[in-house]
Length: 199
Image 1 (cartoon, rainbow, N blue to C red):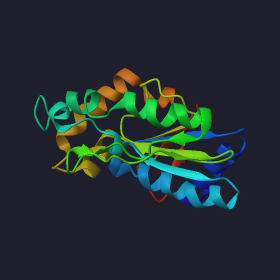
Image 2 (image 1 turned 45 degrees about the vertical axis):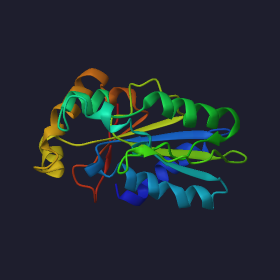
Image 3 (image 1 turned 90 degrees about the vertical axis):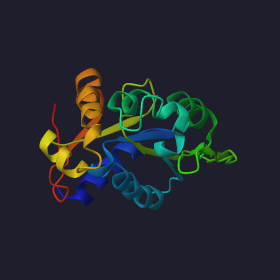
Image 4 (image 1 turned 90 degrees about the horizontal axis):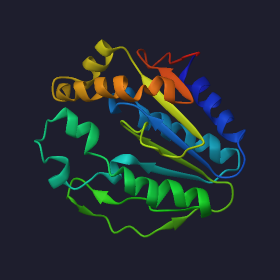
């Protein structure tokens, strides 16, 4: 399919749900999870839904915890990078209950709290969250999307600089089995022609 057909398919899935919807778009950054999440915003707004965009990378743990075992430790990248508790407690859970959410928590570049105020989305809003290694963390969501590619494709897109992360993504596949956990699985070996995985 084309990317636009994929977006239409996901938007239809969201609009078929009642009330506030939480959408998780999971995938290694070079596979385009953030781009796909961004592409959902305008069609959902055009359909009359308020949309909140949140990035998991704004909910990382402090550098002292992320890099406790070194800056290129794949196990730490999988286990210690994301503040999953804060993401659930400050974003996903309160959004479902009352439309309230914290837009950002941690500025990883400056390694300090953003001190962002809470915000509230009115009505049957949609929260779209993108990030890496999100599934298998007990996050509640109405729709989960996982982007996947062949190991060779992922290695090529990560490049030499991020090649050390490959074992983290391999462990994620083995231990979490995101292709079995996600509601929608999309193969993006060729980003111009994403393919839905039929299970």
